[in-house]
Image 1 (cartoon, rainbow over the protein chains, first blue to last red):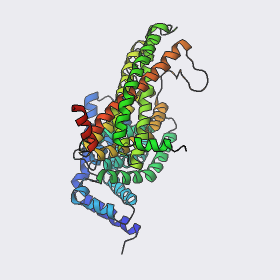
Image 2: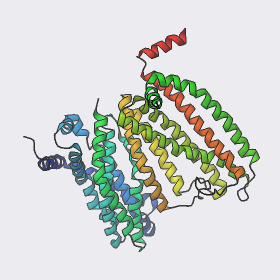
Image 3: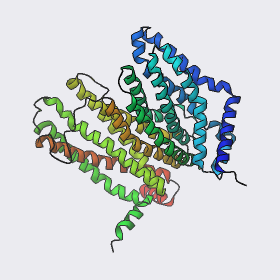
Length: 227
Length: 251
């Protein structure tokens, strides 16, 4: 009677994406947030091209990080409230695999829209066009990493009621290396230096995280929900 | 024949036994910490010669460096206790891990404060985005995250297990952060005390430093045991041994 792991994955992915699509407004929120934050920087720092150009890469990375942080909190919230997370825990398919799909669906609905508008954000801050490509590549590797690390922490706080600020406190130390390497790649590209090394580091970290983070996430969820 | 060590350790894991053991050890550890601390302070502040470059200002090293060692040592100790707590589900290990976190955070804070006090005359700035300073700051955030997560659960044991898991993630994270921050920016002076090979420090400066390290270790043991005792009594308040203890105390 039990479905194969592949069928279960497909069903879960379809369900998560459908749920997100039915509430399209929620997908737009992180995007709007990133747009507004990026708009505020020129007001605060003055509209000089040279200055904005120099800080553009870092500003966009941090903005994307914060926008993702806002959306992270909701990763398991709905499922805990309606009890479907318990069903996932009881399901015969491995929990880590199910959570990996969950995280992937969450990445598609929150991070992908941010990556799509990132060239627009870069344009607003006058980032040179050749560098925008590097920025998008860095974001493509950095955002899944953040989703994976963030998922572990969200799972840990699943048993608590209010976790917004706590999540930020826990995530920020863990995402320091991600920010350093992603921003390092953009900065190197901007100065005309080779930028492959930091991108390769990000890729290596992502491979490691794809394997280990779902397992850690499953363990964390079991700790946080057993009562 | 040599079975008594595992048996003794096993028995030590039970809260009433550990309560008595910690109560017996604590005064000794505290006394030793005070005596060695006083000796180290005298040796460092009075007997040690002034530095040829930094003059007397370098003497803050006798607080700064032992605190920095302790901030990492306690994180490591917390990680070991957290691992034991998660794998074998020993209640005492959970308490030890959770009560280590505030002590470690305090040492990290002392390291940051003394470091910036030292940095002002030497580097001309209170704070700089140097690799080791940044790593230490990240370490402080990790400690605060563990403490915050522990307190956000209503059930203490569940909170302790979740926070123990976070502490283990942090153990993996600390070397990664250190490496990446090093790659990013560094200005800090290199280590002057080494375990292997000759240290770049005069013997008259070295012994107060090592004595102060002993003092901070003893202080950690004393402080931890005091906190764990209080926590055990609070957690086991319904148990018979606590009742017997209360009767004993009031009698």
